[in-house]
Image (cartoon, rainbow, N blue to C red; front, side, top):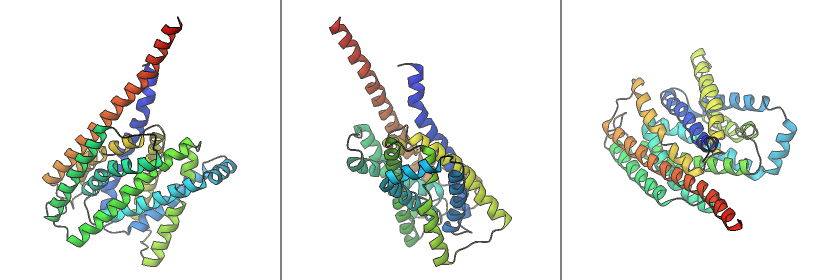
Length: 325
């Protein structure tokens, strides 16, 4: 395989990993921020800025209108998946430590991705080692939830009601995140560019969070500190990181994306040391380590399969040439 071919194969996972570095740091920051501001206030203001940026910087608005009309069902589903994903994860951070919440999300991710793959991408099958990795992640996730219920998480005792609420929010995040992955892939296959996706992706999220703000009367003060925090989330945590993610998704198989999201856990666990409200838990570390190792196993399995598949056509062409000769 040529060096350019290897670089092309590595570009997608590397872009997803770049997103993970930013997203992990942002998770800890948001986990602290939602203790004082409502999740919908943070999401609404962050994504209004992001949506305006992506829409205004897209030159061909006429082409955007045409491609949205042509792919409308998938664009709508991407919008809905995005809205549920971001709102649910912020609510999860209100009751769970970021590493714990991300662990539940990551632990369920590969399983949901595999199940959805049977329906949405029947031509792509998960590998046996990816099934094994998904099972290991699920076991580690259950272990983390048990430790949280017994007061061994970084935030101490979590009441049963709050724990159940946090888990439900994590499940919703996982399902919607898998939806984001698949519908992004489908739109990319249909010829929609990453910039066009970003320019039309956050409409439902903005509308939903505005409704929540009005219904719950949960507007926060637009103080310099809050405005600065929202802008940081919007510019770095949304505009830059999501662009990296979108570029990575269209170049990477969905199950590989789900496995790579596991790197969020290690980085999140380390960044949590700077949050004074959290007291790092050894049990959380064990769960994070188990899920991360399972992620590595699944990613390695997909990489090995991709390398093998890439070599088969070349071998077939060689044999065909020999026959003709």
